[in-house]
Image (cartoon, rainbow, N blue to C red; front, side, top):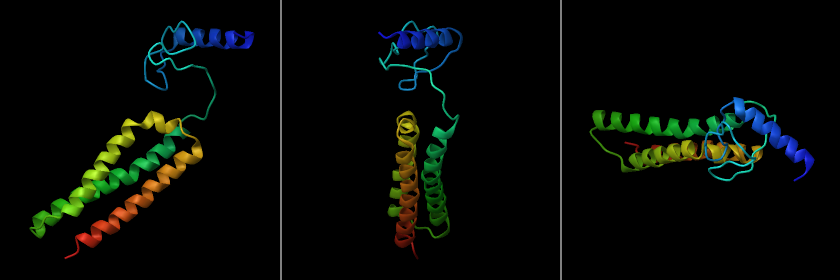
Length: 144
């Protein structure tokens, strides 16, 4: 092991002796870590300086259309059933798909954050386009 890596691992151990941080991959508590790898998943760890919160920005931007379409579809489905006494399977399907998509988006947040920023923005923007298309599909299949 190089001298620089040894210094970095010593600094990491000193930091984790005082602060309880979670492994960025598996979420395991690293308080009192003895080496430079996560004992749970084996991921090599290092301390770094980064912009705080920017990783979550594009993740949140991607969650908005998923949650919005799911909420809009469920509200519209209920109103349609109450007012018009009709049920739309297309709208129900969109609501279920976007609900499952929102759950997956939340579940895979850590994996999303580890993607390159350009790819994160592309995925988040793609969800907005998908939400727009889903809105058009629902409007087409639920017209009176």
